[in-house]
Image 1: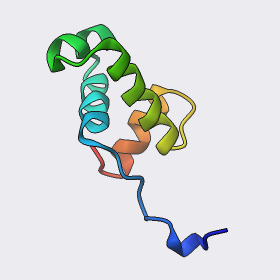
Image 2: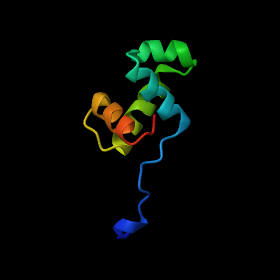
Image 3: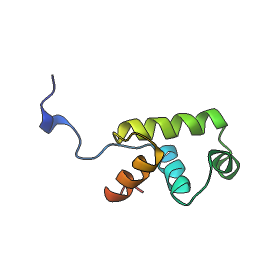
Length: 73
């Protein structure tokens, strides 16, 4: 089991995860994000789910709040 000090201080989000969270923070729906980024709806959903998991949030709103507090977006 890794020591707690071995963990990075902040979750590492991919550029796609950051972009999707940024757009969601601006009120964009997943379908809007698809149009703005040219990503597939499946890829947007995966990025949102992955970012939410990495940030330890229960939902996208919680993920956005944590990402903002950690200055990740």
